[in-house]
Amino acid sequence: MRGLRKAYGPIQAVRDLDLDLARGEVFALLGPNGAGKTTTVEILEGYRSRDAGEVSVLGIDPAEHAARLRELVGIVLQSTGLPGYLTVREVVEMYAGYYPRPRDAGEVISLVGLTEARDRRVNQLSGGQRRRVDLALALAGDPELLFLDEPTTGFDPSARRQAWEVVRDLAGLGKTILLTTHYMDEAQALANRVAIIADGLIVAQGTPDSLGGRDAGQSIIRFSLPDGHRLPEQFGALQAGSTYELQSQAPTRTLHELTEWALAEGVELGGIAVSRPSLEDVYLQLTASAEAA
Amino acid sequence: MSGIGLALRQVRFENRAFWRNPASAFFTFVFPLMFMVIFNVLIGGGNPEASRFFTPAIIVFAVITATYTNLAMSVTMARDEGILKRMRGTPLPAWAYLAGRILHAVVIALLLVIIVAGFGALFYGVEVPWSQLPELLLTLVLGAATFCALGLALTAFVPNADAAPAVVNATILPLLFISNVFIQLDGAPAWIDAISSLFPVRHFADAMLDVYAGRGFAWSDLGVMAAWGVAGVLVALRFFSWEPRQ
Image (cartoon, rainbow over all chains, first blue to last red; front, side, top):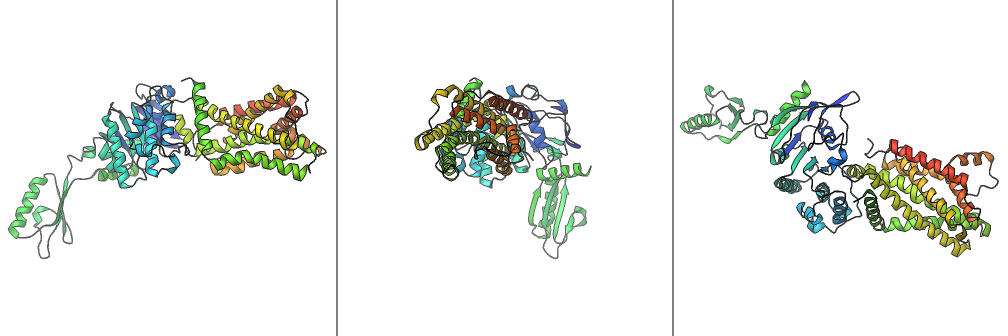
């Protein structure tokens, strides 16, 4: 995808976006609501036309050959209804029949963990189970590429973990997955690569661990000291009451110096913690600067 | 599988889902019969002449309910729930999906016709016009096709599922009253007659009355219906939406 643009009237939803996916990878598109995630994905899926740019999905231009593309991809949209009076098995079989080379319905149902509910009507399922039916329908045609648009929004924590397991299983089958989400931990848990999109532009791209220089960035050491003890000036710590914060490019060395001083003084460092900027910190920083620009 | 095979397969799934909602299925079939009994008793007063009017009239009402009303409402709901959008994301051709829904509506309409015609013959002594079978079938098929097309076209003007019953009823109920369906038009003011003649309900009703009276093909009525049907198809092709309106 090269130089993708899309405007709705005067609003530029997507401005000059470039994106490359390798086969077999799980790619997460992160961004706040209204950043252009869904617009981008719906252009790739063939639902929307684009104003400019080149798009090739599995070698197919979705604007030219949407019908051929749909045989090869599976789509989970943000919120879509299901025929409530049919059973899980019937709905999956119905969708499987639309594809030239479907995956066995029973296999699809077990892949999403609905084997025990397969003969229940869709309108008797819980919200989390329905979301798994969504996934099953996207898998019915045995797609090479899977689009998941905010697949776990509204899930409770355990349902999210289960959904993640399903996505990992799919990645294990060699499927390419393009995921949009606004959950940092979801991108961290599932994706090989992440792009952060804000205001129609990609502001950062990379593996979840390296994004925004997280791997090379500063570590933060936090601790507190008992009353009557002060940290020497040479550490250059930020102090708030009895709590101190040290920023360091070489945390091993800094920690060593700190603990050496504490042992010599005979004080205990309370609640000591060493952390790196989280994906969330990076995300908030990048999307905030994009908004300010 | 061919497009036609896929459409027929879709009819089977639609049909299965239809019968799994027994309350809805029951009243779909009982509703026209309730109207038939009420009109015969209150308006016809048990007069056989009135029964000869109300049997074909209620057949027309039943076909319109099963096609126009049913499709306009259920397709708008499916659109709002995102069922249509999801369908668009599969290789199923758009026309095959809609053909499946249309065919299912026509099957229900034909079942209703059999029930209403049978009820009229059994309880009101109104004979089924067997000698006019080709006329009867052509009128029914053209009527069902026209009102399916108009029902799909109407969805383009219904902003959301909540508005669907109001919009659908407002477009069809007044016409049913002024078009020789709920009330016989003999002696009605000329302007009512003129207005109702513009719309397809009147021509469907008149064509069906002609069939029941043994007057053969009502070509001019069938022609007006067909024109409305074509207009419905064109509007649907141009304005039909697969995605929920914002």
